[in-house]
Length: 508
Image (cartoon, rainbow, N blue to C red; front, side, top):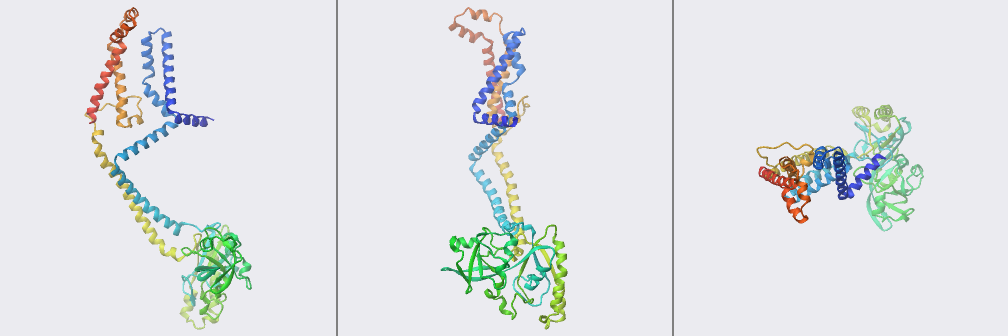
């Protein structure tokens, strides 16, 4: 309840600051009057009682500052005043403001633009379930046969061998990308088709925004020729038509049936190449020229590498454990391949180098692409360069402020002597703008002058008797001449004017 009360009280003070100041003045006056009455009852004279009460309470402005500093809204109000003061100061120096803003804009803008690219290419994960569990399975070393891709792919028989016999993956899937000429209704486009196994979408956890995804039954022999279009392609090329399900799409003169629209934001696992159409991987021989160079179907030929293999790790399995368990399977498979008919023309050197190849398991939560491998080092170098540019820009700002301070030397100049700050003054009080400091200093000087005048001009004992017998009109004139309070006021004001003049001369 106490924090809520403090919050409500602070909001009330912020919304009604003028009323809060009035209430604070009334409380101080009431406390002062109560203290005076208590001292009068104790036997003190009225003037002495008021003087003693004022001495006891001290400076009223200092008390107000202390009360304001206790509440949280004072800090917020002070921050807002500092912001407004900074805005006014910057508005008075447009050249300095423009230079500072442009300097920061150059450093921050370059870093923001490049970090956006780095985030898209190097840091962002695929929009799939638990992307940290995804790994890619690649081969390293020499290969005897044909390769379609970056050189680290697997043959489809090798993929099926690892998929069926491994104990470290919850599942494995394979994919391959190739462009096709696609025609939907009357629109024809050159699109990127991704050929995927039947467990591609279930293992990734990607759902269909409309219709369904490719199922294992679609990838089986004799399955239907179906296709799934990406959400982006559905919006841009097909106009977001909800009746697209069931319509035919012609890909390289092969008719497929659209059965679904992919999840929004998912464009495949190949970074830099957004897939627009997904088809079962069993159709790769019919829709691509990959199998044209071989006599055997590429799904059964171990001498051609083209399948990009992924796996999802089982809980508790690390990359090292997965690689250690898969390596014997890979070694046994390539050892059996060397004895097959496909190696009849291979030399002993080629066989030895092929047997020395290894299998590598690496993280693939952010997808797999040769573009990332090519851009990783250049992007980090550029990121370091623009970081240095930002540091230079930040280092130039203090120099600009120092150069600007020289234009305010007269305002901040110090005289030969400087008195220490009065007791009760706060740091915020001493940091206020010069004009406010001078006004508050004049009030303090007048108060001190009045205190000194009270010592020099004591109240005459017969003052009350003389004023009591005078007329009201004459008493006012007589009061101006004889009342010690008025003499203290005028003496204090003269002292304040003299002290303020000396201070103004010292400040410039």
